[in-house]
Image (cartoon, rainbow, N blue to C red; front, top):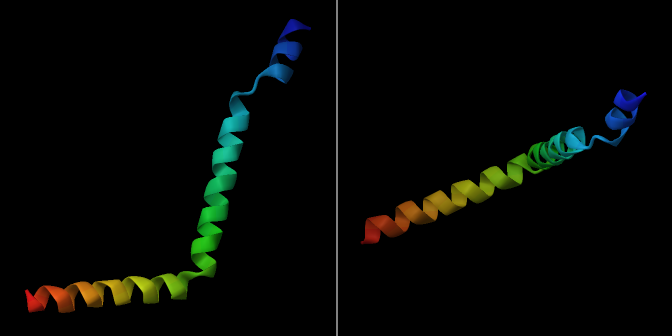
Length: 55
């Protein structure tokens, strides 16, 4: 009976579930905004290249 009670009050698995849920949300946001992120990164790199050529 004590083993069942300690299992019910154990909270180590809760942290793992929270981390998995956060990762799922982040991955889904990246997939939703993939084109916008790609365009943003490309414009940043093009600005870096153009400004480095002027130096």
